[in-house]
Image (cartoon, rainbow over all chains, first blue to last red; front, side, top):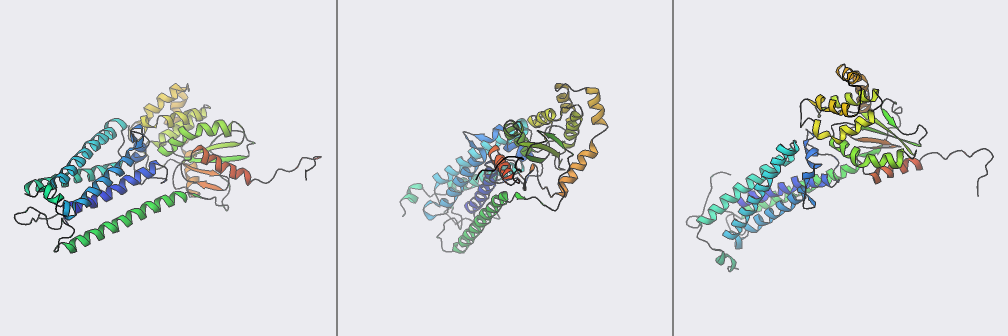
Length: 152
Length: 256
């Protein structure tokens, strides 16, 4: 099991965590298994929407994008692509920043902690670390994107 | 992840490439895990969404009618009585109270169609809910239960367990705003005057298998989730349709 495989598996778990919250927000799932009630507070707050869509739905899209990149990165043509590694690093880095902002809102503004959001934040952080390690490995590699693109 | 293994001189991790010979087994294992995870995730979400539809069940007809121990609004002669088992700190109850209930009051209660009753079901997971229930009852003692009910739900984020460990002070401000006799109110909440009534309502909820809040009893349906106005009206219409036909007035002829 290598980093991109772990990235893909974690991203898939992230898809389901975000989908769980998005389906709750959409009224498809009746109650959240949260324990503290914090999840509902967060999901009903005004911060649960971003650009007209629920933050959880954006999360689903984000994780699907990371999953797709990781799966593409497992194919021979893209295995040593620095561009792909850099794209993943930027995407997961953006995810960390966005998640940090959401966590700040939970702690300082909404005054409620959603355990599922904390779980998602942990996944986002690990995805970033894996992407950073992957990018470092690609940088150390002499392989080029040009070679990768014309190898088929 | 264990010690990182790289192909000598190329910096490529083993197993990165899907078609690489030696890593084929590893890749197959990975895709198997991915597919199993996909099936498990989709299955779980499907189950949860299907469970959402199971939140509606038939009222147990072997149980006696729900005792009239909560707080009601509406006409005694209303054709349908709706009972809500609610928790003041439950966000879904807050959502119903602030988004749906105003319409229910205007369009169903004030028009005499529905009599609406609130029964306490303070859940153990909400640490500040009991003071809120006690405050509502004490406001009710002064004829302002529904006013306190509304202000508690509208301001959940000011007194809930995520915000404060001393909700009494915030709720006390609500009591002042509502114009309650504060001395009487304080005495009421401090002595926990209505603790037994609230506990009795919670016991009633447990007896009827209420598993979450809000849970509504409308006609023969028990609905364990917050409802939109349209959904609420649908269940009220069902209850109205199930009512026995009104007896014909003496001296009136039925049309053929």
